[in-house]
Image 1 (cartoon, rainbow, N blue to C red):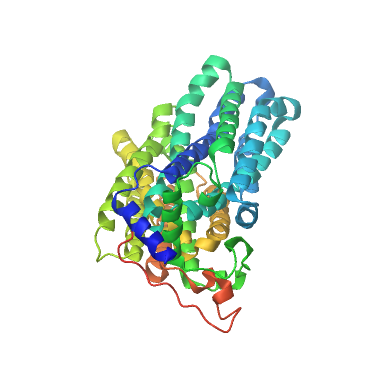
Image 2: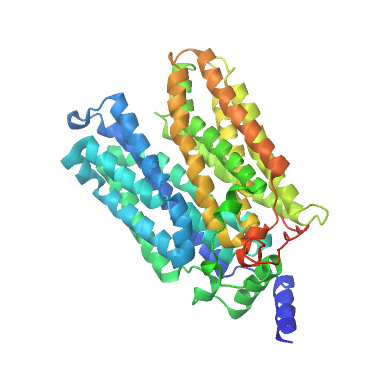
Length: 474
C-alpha cells in the first residue's frame, strides 16, 4: 500500500515539474569543484613561462616537459582506489580530502620551488595528481547516487563542464596575474579558491540524498524511486556488495567504453599539448602567447556542451529513441567530427590563421558531445559500481596522456615539417575511428547483470538478466 502511495507521489512530483531541487545544488557544487581543480591543474603551464624567465628557474626544455608531465604520473595512481574508497566512505569524503590537500599544495608551490627547485616542484605536482585522481571516480559515484536516470546526461554534463570553465578562467587570467603580482600569485589564488570551495562543500555537500540535511522529502523519494525502478533492489547495501572484477574485464560493453575513453583522451591531449607547437612552427601562429586564443577552444567546448544538453533533452522526448541510441549518437558526434576536422587541420597552409584557429576550436569544442556518450555510460552499465568503472577506464585512458606526447616526440623530428605532423593527426584520427567504432558496435546503455553480484549466477544460483533499456531516456 505504502509503495503505491509513494509511486503516486513520485509521479505527481515528476509531472508537476520538480524545478530546481537539492540535486541541482549538488551538481552546481561539483561544477565549481572541477572548476577550481582544473584551474590548479593547468596553472603551471602558464606560470612556468614566467618562472623560467628568472635566472633561478632557467630550466632546460627537457626539465620543463618533465615537470609539466609530473601531474599525470600521480593522477593515474589513485583512479581505481578512488572508486573503491568513494563507495566505502562516501564520495564527499574522497572529494574533500583530495581537493583540500591539492589546494594546500598549490598555496605552498612557490615556497617549494624556491627551496627545492624543479625536483621538489616535480614531487609536489605528482602529489597534486594523486589528490586529483580521486575526483572523476568520486564524481561518478556521487552522480549515480543523486541523479535520476532521465537526468544523467544533462546534470552530469553540467557538473563536468566545470573542467572547461576552470581551464578558461585560468588560461585567461594567469598572464594578467603574473604581470601584475608575480607568478607566485597564480598558485596563491588558485589554491586559495580551492580552500574556499572545500569550506562551502563541507557545509552543503552530501554523498547521497539520504545523507543530505537540505533535501525535501518529496525530492528524496522521487530520486530513490526512480533509481529503484531502473536498477531494482539489491540484497545488500550497495557499498557492501562484492566487487565483480572479473565481470568488469570480460564485459564487451565496458571494454568498448574503455576503448572510447582511451580514444577521447588520446585525441584531446594530442590537441591541447601538441597543436600549439604545430601552429607555431608550421603555421607561424603562436597561440600560447595569446591568452584569448589559448582559452578559445575551451570556450567553444563549454558553449557547445550546453547546446548538446539541449539537443539531448529534445531527443529524450522521442519515445522511439532508446538511451543506447542517444549515447552512441552523441559519442559519434564527439569522436567522428573531430576526427575529420583533425585531418583537415593537417592540410591548412601557412598564413591561414583564421581557418587554423577555427578548426582547432571546433575540433576541441565538438568533442564535448562525448560527455553525453561514453562519459556518463559507466552509470548506465552499473549504478552500484560507477565510480570503480570510471576509475578503471580513466586510469587506463590517462596513460594515453603520457604516451601521446612521447610518441609525438619520436615521430616529429623536425617541428617545421608538416608531413611529420600529419602522421600525428592521422594516428589521433585512427584512435577516434577505432574507439568510437567499438563503442557503437558493442556499447550498451542498460544495467548489466554484474551490477548486483549477489543476484548474479557467479554468486548465487539465480541469474539476473540485464535490465531492458528504457526508450524514453537520453
